[in-house]
Length: 422
View 1 (cartoon, rainbow, N blue to C red):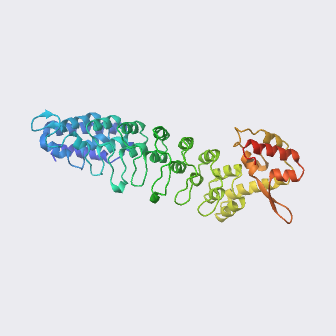
View 2: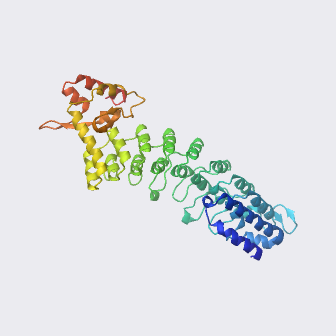
View 3: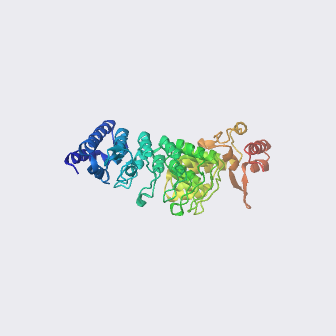
């Protein structure tokens, strides 16, 4: 390579290996100045076939670097130079076939085309120039990188405008990586609500799954893993399959519990997801929360009255998690005292009557030691009753059996309000 170009290229290399997130505005201006110097030397001092040969090299390729750092002026200058017929000096398709389209589709040492870089880093003007000059809008990255295309990188980085440009250029919104990820799945995995919403509006397949080697996960699984409550809500509103199990039997609810995101767990519960779903090992989600020491989620599930307290307590003790043990025992004691129907809160009936269809998930039942239940929790509470023959009864059944008709009636009315009446 020309000595002057080598010198400039060495300076660019100090930055070109870094991601854009690690480049300061001052560094970006410096890089673009160096790119401009390089292109000036390449086109106006060297020129001709030698310049085209340099543009053809995969290492330290200036077009790829300009695309990565969003230098639309220099990208356009390179495209124009590539379109000059060197044998005639005419602007148009180059006689040797190495025109703008050729270079716009050239892979570099990272097996990226300029379009990959423009999409990954959100440079819409650069992308438009490349596409106008015949760039393939859906080139695949290397097999080792799982064959991601520009729209996948744009979805990962949250570049909505790039996604829109690519879709308008007839990029398949269902295009998959080698692991079966579509742009929707990528957008959900990285928590980009606007991209997920846009793709759903474009009628992207909401129930698409990854390949079995990637556990057959859908977008809701990914959003739940990441704790992206807004994405979870968008997907639920779109009617995604909220009960889908992965190859290991995990649902979105399992992922949300394991991740410790109480807000996502509650959104899923509010959507009517099956809260009794078991893990592959046959445990309920309260056990799962206790085993992973997810206190916030555990307290939420206790409020909802979900899960077997004895099993959860057992695993918490096995893990020597005294904080989790204390929370479960606090609820066990409160429930036991509640079912004796003695020393009940004076306004328990009023607490129950405060529930409406709009606030069923709110913790309006407050018992001893700060134990809180929502409507579902108080209705789900059960206890073994009897000296010899044990029965598992609800609070309403115990109240009726012991002649507390007011409490029994209040609970039955609440069951109707909650839509649980049978």
